[in-house]
Length: 446
Image (cartoon, rainbow, N blue to C red; front, side, top):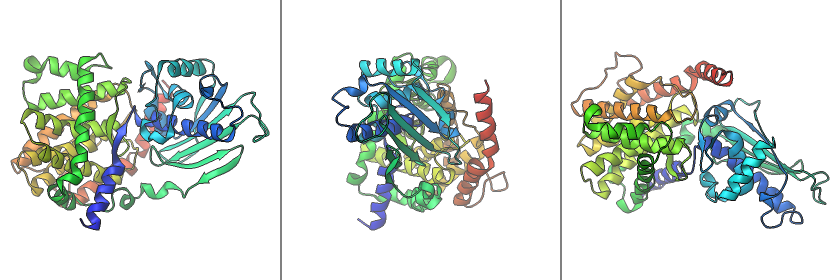
């Protein structure tokens, strides 16, 4: 196995991983959990077993505007509540930072009850940080009335996350820095995001990588299919997936597109409404991970695709999404389902017999179709955007397989697929900054 193969596998393992709950509030929970653990480590005299469920904790969380936007209306797992305050409180009372994006994996009824008490008592404060970073969280945790020899006043610790949802770059205790890593600014650079991948290299890797080295990607099916079934069996959010599936014959048509739309939307329904099952995320987004994989999994289920072909299609879809996302950054005003559904379109094209040229056609068709769909925060309504993205992915794949591609005379499309991707990234990362600010203003002033 070559060094480049190893590098691409490392990118996949870094960018495709389980996440419990929407990743913006989960980033907040992770930072709070880390700060709380620092107090435990530095104040053993006052932090007996179970102290987090009784202590008079006080939380001060400062976040970037985009974190606030994506945390205002999304369900927090196991609570029946929405928003960053309850996510922060859960991080304090039961979070385990060693679990990364599954920081709330130890959630239980006692923790939920205590977290609600902290929020109701006004002991959790969330504000907007004075930062230009799109992804930023600083969580400060203190314990009232528990001064100790190791801290002149009441114990206080903080943790800072930058640029990636699980990237803790600084921690401190009692106004002293404990750990400080180099700024995460490089993470916003394209080459740092995907190692300089191209669509050509992604396609060749997906087809040639040893199956035993990529079989791990089948966990996509295990996690996201479970979320889809949960969304169909329960009453989550707007029940977009259930509505599509229950009206498949009379309205939508009993076909692959409707099946893929319904299954993918159902998984998003469950996740956005606070389901306690994890999603397999992509590039720090659970919804993106669902949308990049579920249409491909739906095709495999409907047409009895074997595990190796499914794994190669999922590698292709995930890497294409990672590649595009590298130009956009972790958070932007561009809806992530545009990126994710572009990846799934590529996976569907390949499963239906398409080659490299057809994959490029699918990417261009997607870029010329739904680029510009805005992100107005994480919420139950995201399931509708997910369904729209899947519909466009299937349309783009069908056209690509016929050799039909939006020409370079149209809009942002270029003959070079890489230039097309860069154009899409420029629109989402730079061109829509004003739109992002306006969206946040509208949301905060309602």
